[in-house]
Image (cartoon, rainbow over all chains, first blue to last red; front, side, top):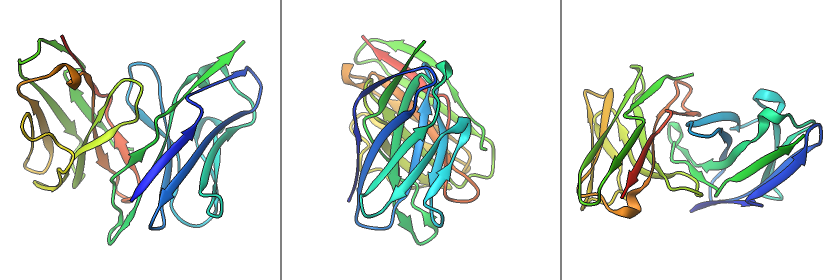
Length: 117
Length: 113
């Protein structure tokens, strides 16, 4: 079984400050891990993903995340927040099937990022 | 990146009425998914198709929800009769060519009153 916990439903930062959104997962198989962003009235856009290899992954818009197996974490960071980063962020996990990603994403509850001027 | 078009984008219906949503991905995506996203929650998988066949519909409320995938490309999701708790965003998604990434459409917003 797999699950995702996002710590903090709301995070508020000042423009230019560090962004840290926390995600912990549970998985009985080696996981695929994802961060998606959702802007108001829009669908989900992939920010970044971890499949295999390098544990520090870089995504779009200056975001990155580090897979830490020992801590079962996949926290999302950005060195300097921009007003346009205000959105809902979802961490997700899926398992590995015979053909690769099973594709069955298990999402966390989401974290709303507020960026103050 | 995959293109996934969904329609209608917004729908308001009364409880006990029916509604249908369409998903039109660009061709070449064998695996298609429908997710339900209730306000304030993360999306939850309703059904997964591989080509024309259903791989997983364990979370689909089959007494009121149905879905099909025509010719392994387009898909429809139907709700009949709708309940108030069906108010949500219905997201269609496809698996990318690498097999590791799921791409989502813009979603169909349903409000049941």
